[in-house]
Image (cartoon, rainbow, N blue to C red; front, side, top):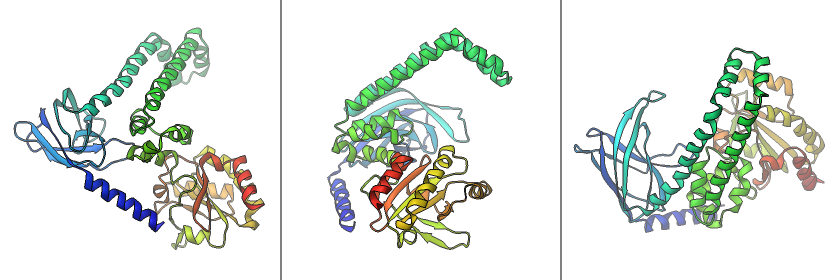
Length: 390
């Protein structure tokens, strides 16, 4: 593990050493002098800016920074919504001009919209805009597809608000509603085809995972095949690693399980290593009282626990419940026989848990992940444990 960390650190040092400065400058009309601008990496996470600067009295600005690889970033006003998505890269000087207009926002933060955007000397941004155009075209198609059926949707929504279930059922089964549903199904199939087409035609480079991040709001294990279709270069890129962290939160098979801490009712801190001591295999299960699929899986885990606990199998349940009372009520109902904790020390964050259930079967001695996600649920968990312990 130390050797791997050394290699990764060396790679980062080499990349940083090879990175040249890029310059991004231009004029943003409508912003007052002294306004702070930032370049924020595009991803599904709350990324920190890679550069910051201020607007001059005449609306001009200039960033001088380094990029170890081509970065897809939002040019935006600091601590505000809105912005313009562009590409910056080492050694390239780019000009971005725009009119910036402040608008109402849905929360306490300000909103700044960028209009009449002009990008000079950025081939990568031109390519990005071509792929963004696909989303714009689909937005137009959505409006065209749904406009003829707005009336029937309004009637159904009104009936729901009035809690008139008989009318809801009647309207939903009408020929117009059925046709509307058929059109919507076709629309979303078109969306899938267009997005997947763009992603797959770029699967050999970082553009594949970059576009996946751009087009999709989140990833689940259902996108595992997409990730595995990327080339090694694409998977190992910054964008590929971002995609991987969502599809395999906490790590995939063969990777080291991340160390976590839990706090018991007695206030004492318990570590993953302590839970693993004396065991052969450990199932880590992130769940919550309100999660139907999580609780549906518990009887299966109980069955496997009863069958294999005497052979070295252990379970660690970590609840993401914010409501302690709801968690304790669920514990009373489920009567879990293994170590279980409510997550008050950030274990779910360490494993990058975005959706539950999130489950990991690990080798308790080497702390290596054997399988995760759907591969350790239901019959697959039983089969895997039988393979390992019988």
